[in-house]
Image: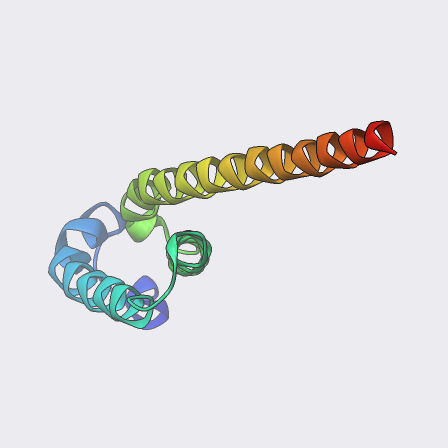
Length: 113
């Protein structure tokens, strides 16, 4: 991308000319990320994919002719973060429920003594 950025192709045409190369590269990168994360649980998968997409997006934002594709990755990042937040909320409420149950059981034991 760095070489292409300094090429003689007109700035306005770079995104169009580079689009097939970028599509092939992104498709391969995304497949590698998904295959690498296949054995992870839901939370781990969301973190891993968010990190992968953010890393790819950061590299794309360096060049004006890839910025449109970089912005498209925002939706994927948003979706994975939403899943991560949902998982964490469920975990938090389960934890609170368990703490409450322990407290309730301990209170009953003290009353029975």
